[in-house]
Length: 125
Image 1 (cartoon, rainbow, N blue to C red):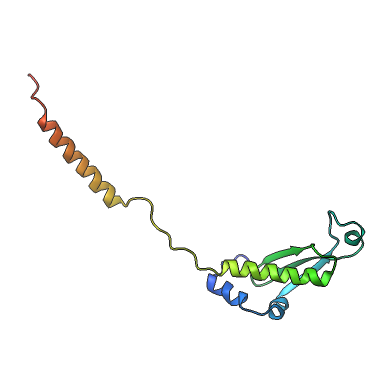
Image 2 (cartoon, rainbow, N blue to C red; image 1 turned 90 degrees about the vertical axis):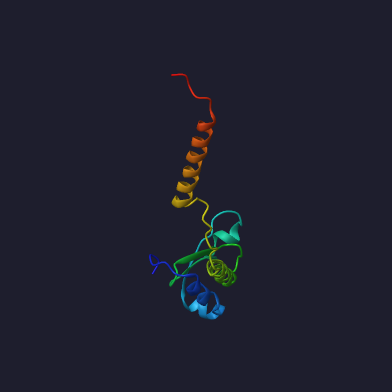
């Protein structure tokens, strides 16, 4: 379903789910976290990568030493992303002039140029 584009209404429906319902739609994977943290990070599979299957949103959490807490953080991150995507997009305001308005402006410029040309002194022939 990743290649299919969801509407903001559908993201809003997912964002309205409880964390328990949201976790049922996710698959989680625990792994060794890298980086700072010393022995607590290196000895346990405490980092969590969670994927929301219907939308394809992926969240990774390695902030805590507890795998359970990292799972909760992943769910919160997924919910925050769902809420962000559920906002109605702003209406686009055209910034370029229409073809008709460009044509009107150019016609008016030609008319003004013709009037100014007629004000000139006649050339000697």
